Image 1 (cartoon, rainbow, N blue to C red):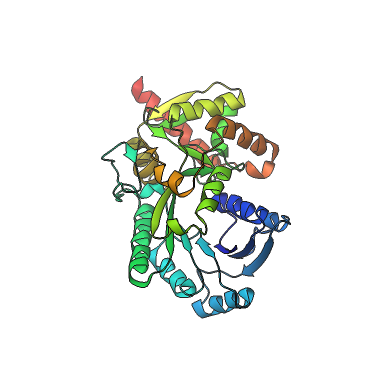
Image 2 (cartoon, helix red, strand yellow):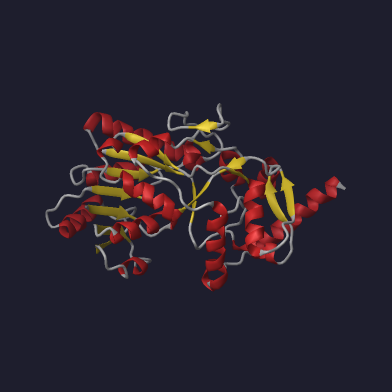
Length: 346
């Protein structure tokens, strides 16, 4: 297989890139070249770097670089991990329409309607999210790609990831601009932790290695053409259970303070987009039906439970200082919000 990834070094795409190379496939990485060294060390497959910024460089210049790298070959798969609006989709279409057998784009499960009309989410659940522009842009990308598929036969597959994590970041619900480390630090210091709502809404998290196995199963899969597929784990946990799993892995007591998402949105305006990330996403109970994924990728299952994945991630984060980016602004904000809520409750 000859595949080209646009991006290829993020939380989701790094795991996929590794699996592609370990399978012995030929991988072309189109990105700015800032984080390719980890993949360059894998010797199984063949890695070719195409250094450019697809979002700023001219279409003709990018197409020229790609054609030079391919040397007249045609790609089995192109996957774009960094497309967020229809203009970027249109640019991809112009560049790749005659170069690949399958074009895969990453959307998001946040595109599903909020509030939900049914607790069980399938790929046919309506798409509508009035709370988050990010999700509305993803919906517009999906709609445009479906038009390209219907009108031009552009061989698209839309993948909707759920909450996916890796060894570098512990997955939490409420965090600041610098990621989740400050939440972990607060737990280690015995400080109270904010959990949105009453902590009983259901959520699903997936380790990126599990996600990669499912994604690879869709690559070059003729039955996936023209389809939207959600890739999630079958495990659904409450946010209380998720935070408790983190506390157990840290061997600390969980001091949870439950605060409504609406109040967090009001307190965070100007600093954090909790209207989108909470009310448009994590505040909703999300239970996924993976029947379609299992039909397209027979035998697939998510093998890493959240409690196991959290232990692995915490072990890595605690051993690597570069994963411990502090966020004093968020820490102070948490203290102020918790004090305000507890003052009212008294």
